[in-house]
Length: 302
Length: 302
Image (cartoon, rainbow over all chains, first blue to last red):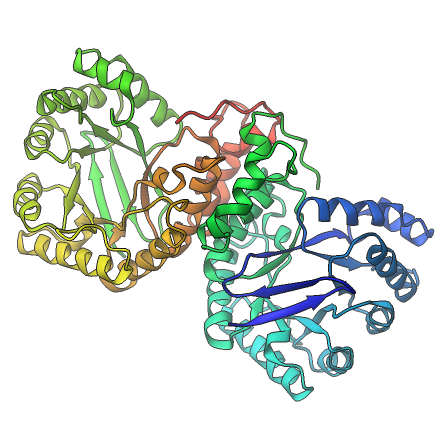
């Protein structure tokens, strides 16, 4: 069974077939969050700290950390954010940037074995990122697009993923340390987006034997009641074999769907996590529990 | 593409691959509903009428009608219930009984092409039910158990389904009029129940080319927050290829999951049904809409 081990200084998380799904908190990312971007650029990381703590409390087993802010010193900001997050939580992190110097700065301060997010199938990107990943002994997210863009054909995206896994092996990075992101398009814009991902995840698992992840929220972009779409998407992707996602565990419908899908996939032994989440009035309000007890739902946050 | 056409006097419903999932309302069934059983036995069908209207209003495209009450005249009650339901709704029905005389009485009064629920793989049952189905020109639910009971091995259940499809063909009933129920066990009692069904549905679709259905609520029996489990189960089953279910469309979480899964499977063109359900304040409260608008949830009903 394929297992991708990611760690902090004190904690290991295993992404793997036959295991509970790994929720990677998406919130620490200034893209589309103007206030967070302004604060981080001005050296105020209080919201980063709060988002880290809240996502872990909601059930995130890992956190993604991104500091991509235009005209800012991204390497310095990313390093600072990672140090801060590692000081307030013990979960392993995904170091998220498209800037090689930011990845380097993040890796330099990181304690443990990180997940580097990401490499693509573009030759230039492969040649810049993979040596970094190999040197750090890290795992890496492999996004299945290349110089030609994002193909709508799942077979083409499969070939790109295969190419990345092969290039990683050339750098001494084993396939179990490559977590493929099949790329999730908004279903409102492309009606086949779901089926593409489900088919691709199944092939990636059966034929390449790799773990998978995705930016889950993108699937519901532009639709009403979008958290129900995102949650249902994740459940179906888990049914097809997806093993992790970058997502928001603070959205009750999304977290509930993931926990229920773990039950149904047989990955929540004796339904223990489900029963704990939904029986204990002191448990987090993230999953079905809050709803079952008839509480008023919190307003959805984007 | 396999298509099972079921009809009332005025309306056709098609269960099929590549089409929206067909929700068959489960409520008109006195099993476990003491009050309904007592009322029906005493000739009071007001609750049957109310349940028929409410389920169709909530989105049921078909209704299952069962009158299985101990020590009652089931054939007479079932015929009466069917006539009443057909007089207040126009959706096609599943005529549900394990008593051959009740199926006969139901078929005799039914207007249209019904779904007969059900036949099993037991030889005696096959020889009694299939001639009825053939004579009525009906479709039939085929439950994948036989004289040896319900196997935990999906391969055995597949073979039972195959035997029923073959026996149906011997009676002149085409495979597209056999809707296989893979049998859904409570996940709380059997952790592999979900995976068994998903694997079986995929084989039934790919190898036998038949439509599928199930009694969905059973999967969450005994668990807290059970409607979230049932809804997520249906979404994953739809991802595996299931095309209909006998379920309760009045449970918001269940209906929302089915509608979201139709979007993600590419069966809700331009997300039209989803957007209508979740944008129009006058639409039914069954799906995500009521929740998105922050309303207090209704208490769950069993």
